[in-house]
Amino acid sequence: MHLKEFVSNYQTYPVLFIGSGISLRYLKESFTWENLLKHICFEITENNEYFLDLKSQYQNENQTYSYDKIASELEIKFTEFCSKNRDGKFKEINDMFYKNLENNINVSRLKIYISKLFADLEIKDELQEEINGLKNLKKNISSIITTNYDTLIENIFDFYPLIGNDILMSNPYGTVYKIHGCVKQPQDIIVTEKDYEKFNKKYELIQAQLLSLFIHNPIIFIGYSISDENIKKLLRIIFDYVTPNSEIAEKIKSNFLIVEYEKDNTNLNISDYDIVLENNTTVRVNKLKTDNFKGLYTELANFQPHVSVMDIRKVYSIIREIEIVGSGIKVEIAQDIDNLGNHEKILVIGSDKQIQIQYENITGKKILRDYFNIIENKIVEKINKIDECRIQKDQYFPIYGFSSFKNTVIDKVDILKQQQKEKLQHILIEKKINKRKGFTNIQDIIDDDSIPKTYKKHYILYYLLKSKIAIDSVEKYLKQEINKDTEYRTILCGYDLVKYGTKEDIQEILKGIK
Image: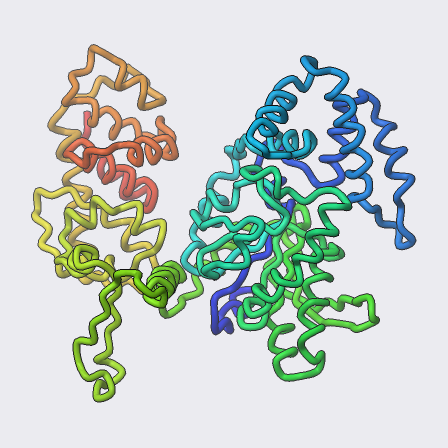
């Protein structure tokens, strides 16, 4: 079965379970659990064999290794090393350790060091487009569960991170459950044997919180090996509560997808895979082996739910507030809802000001100012209102990006495309560009005193259309601009055309410009 067909059967929003493979794929510096411990061993001993000695002591019967026990040994060694070398190699770690203690916060030096290692995020430039595809899933993902310490996922999705005890009392929509801790709270990082013992006791409560997500939502594992213990543990949790051959068990298994990385494989076809649990129970799940993550994200983003996850989160949060006695929220039923038809029912929750903003008239200028938000979050409802907007002939309006999505209906799209091209061509013909300048970045144009300030947008536009300036740098520049003035709108229309138009469209504009 192809992934597209598989996703089309979703009835609810999927839950992502994200492992270290995702951080390794997108970050310049990241570690598997084994490589993290190996790195720390070398830092304190400058000897690769020390880690191998530890590893040999904690090999299990099934040829795996108890990394939590290795971490426990390493924590003792790391503490001893730092204590004996107060102002040495790990002076900064010692400083943080003692500062915490002065504030009655006791966090081991090892966890402080781990949090420092994972704190600085530097994304691989060559995978930025793929990461943008991952970001586009925001509206179609219920929740994310991760064992990663870094903040990559919450930064990409802008989801609220839940760490430690916060997991027990939470809004399940639009959240990241960081079940092994986070660099922002080193004290909650789970790495040693003792940490895991405490976690397993607490996990009985956490799993009750997560179990309903597992039962009612599709689960997609990304960034894990097919043999990863986290996958087996999750299956054990589910089938401790669900009869293996029941109807609900079959529903869970049919929604359970494991995405396993395989270098250079562009396949998006799903196959069956049997996982054998400790009690010899065999669970058949769906497996996708691929290196085509861009295609994976595209298919998941094309899934069209009836309402976005973020909207559900907003409603859920306010309903929780209404439930709190004395919250001060006014509840008013406008009509006799028992006598309303389904098509007549409208739920509006929020402050008077928010509601007025939500239902104000949408104009072309407002859509233009909200361009990147609409594009990145695929707000089709706003795009479909473009025909209702009065867009003047002399108005800059970036229609190409808005018309690139499925399920959009814009009757005057061809008229607006022609208008966009004519506006861009006219402004380049009107102002003469010194083509000998040979600019390759925006900053050089801004810094060039020989170019009048009012002409700079023309230069940026020209060299963008000529593919001399990278489109990603133009996007970054536009997102940083606060004033949505004529300069912004001009460059935005050029960016929109280059990003979503054709080579023929661009050549049509450049034709005749001397």
